[in-house]
Amino acid sequence: MRGAWAEAVALDYLLGRGYRLLGKNRRTPFGEVDLLMEKEGVYVVVEVKQRASAAFGTPLEALTPKKVARLLQSARFLLGRDDLPVRLEAVLVWGTPGAFRLEHLVLEV
Image (cartoon, rainbow, N blue to C red; front, side, top):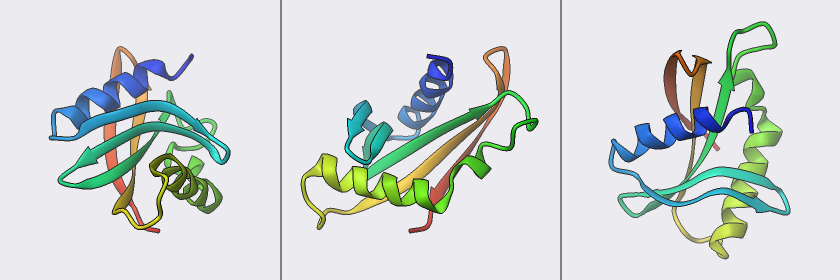
């Protein structure tokens, strides 16, 4: 798995900020959830996007409205309900394992 290192970096980052891991790489009929987390009573679906360079677009450009809608559907599927507080977030990782930077975003839905 090519982006496994980026998911590990994102997970460490989020755990260091008080998030609690509930699951990773969870498949649903709507797609895969990279990280399912919880923070302060809110379930958080985290999409991790990594790019070594902008040659094929930025990590943010990969988060299309269709992808965001599928993430929300996946969250509802995993939680088994649609009345729980859910937030969608993204951790964008720029670079390679030896030299990278992170950007953490809350996605509007």
